[in-house]
Image 1 (cartoon, one colour):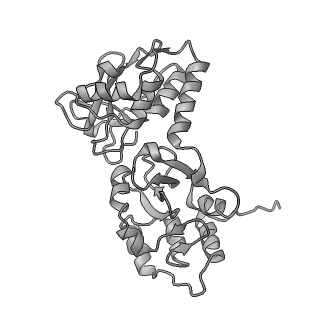
Image 2 (image 1 turned 180 degrees about the vertical axis):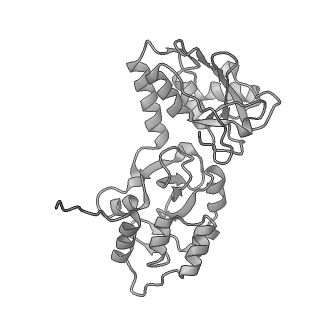
Image 3 (image 1 turned 180 degrees about the horizontal axis):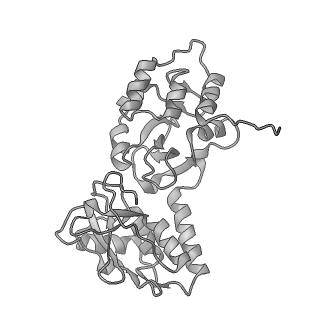
Length: 302
């Protein structure tokens, strides 16, 4: 008979971490309160495992908020508005707060842990810290704190430049514009592009995927979508009558999502994904993949 090794679950690892860092007088959150917080989306199962050991932790370089403090934190509503379904749980005692991307709105996996600037709460200030809470907590015990890493947007820009360099036959690019010129053009067009959209135009002021028949607009072609619906901007065109839209800073969805429009309502259009990731993937493939159905609840492709 071959012996098998059962690895500890993420929740078990979180529980073990919390027990290693208990204060002199532990005060776990009551099971009924944990169940209510889970039902209301204020906790994830992994966070509930931590709070079942003690209500928050004060660690060497950061704090895990207690349950009441997290709910009342000034950044709570801002984080949830920028990243629907996010669960705020701690901070580095300086410029970053930490959250669980419970609904995968940043497309790095449900449950991924991010640090975000507590003042400028948007995708462009996010640092991907870990794929899950257990890994995040354990990584803070040794080595460099994970929120000291490169911002996600900087990693995405590097990947975009590498894709253009590696696949010149897949894409026709233009010289990039400056952030000032892009902002001025967007203001004249009455749109408010997100930082990821601006970063794309800084790398290439529009582009063409000849094999796929897709055009991504440059700064001078920006403009509102049909009907002047706030928060959305024209992004490009594709084969046939395909219209691509992108979310702006004022959209009721995360910023910088490319959408495949359905009718005249971009609010219910399916999200293809974050602009820099999506365009990079298109360039590598030399073609595009678009979802067939909308998912208005969380902006993710079906």
